[in-house]
Length: 193
Image (cartoon, rainbow, N blue to C red; front, side, top):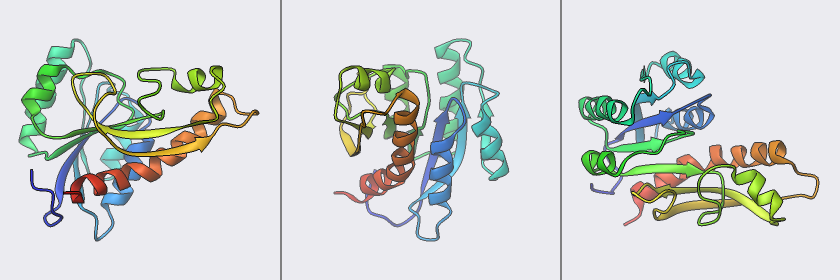
């Protein structure tokens, strides 16, 4: 895939819930000079609030019940092909994509993770950071590979963990920087050589 900005890239976003990162990506995509065009949103949860937001933003959205990973991935691959997707962004998508899916899609997949990778891969990142008395936590955007949360890091930003922070307050702080850095990470990914 060529990385020079020019024609806008078609983006699909996979979500599982409210879609707050999806909102910040849609907001960025609406800028005149944006490098991306969000054309498709897919959720493994047909009741995900983010799907309603995508529809109200005139973006094609699909809730595909996660009966099995194979059926979900096969249906998703058909849609990604149909909409001619250049990049897939995972935004609060709570399922793990198979190596087979990554290979078949064969285009970049980016994910946002609420920790300073390589620290705290997987779930419960905030409680782990607090339990270990870390001074900082943050968010990372990375390329998706077959190994969980192990792909090349594109962008990270850290936040200070205060003595008064709990899981809820830390999550809120990190979510705020996620919204800020996901669009920046996509720009960086598209424009870096």
